[in-house]
Image 1 (tube, rainbow, N blue to C red):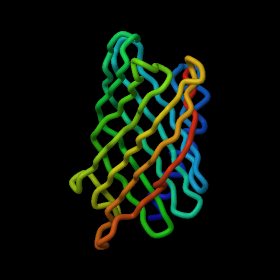
Image 2 (tube, rainbow, N blue to C red):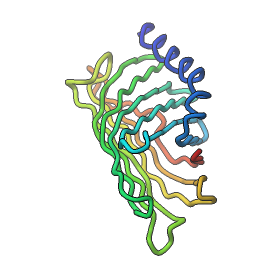
Image 3 (cartoon, one colour):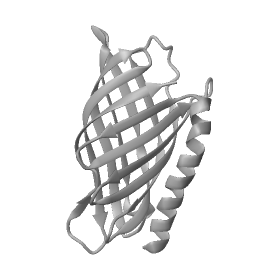
Image 4 (tube, helix red, strand yellow):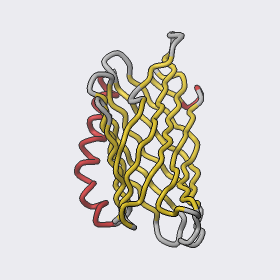
Length: 190
């Protein structure tokens, strides 16, 4: 457990050091908050290639921490399209006082703006990691989020949503939830 905890701390430290470089490269920064939970994510798509990366860190005051890194391919429709989707995989690591683990989940994300009200939209993601690619104390894992968002500016969106992170722990008949619940946030494109 200590090794995974040190790995998660290392990933968070490396992310803090790399973030200024990523911000200069462009992409989007997503900050979501709840009473006991904070999550920061960085997303970027390489222009003209359809390659999309995602880095995220979630901290719950009492329940633990989660970090993830994802690689996706995205739909390269014209920017006038109301739908933006991507499919791929995420490597997710978590640490709590009692459990540590990691998994590779497959899934995707979407963002849809309503044609009748283009400043209002839905966005979300969902990933599932079966037992064959779950390690440490994790038997399987679900990482998901759904949100209703509003564009304040062409480059800034506010949102309210619901996050569901569920981890089946080996030898326990219940699922461990990390950072679940309602949240609000801000996404900034740069």
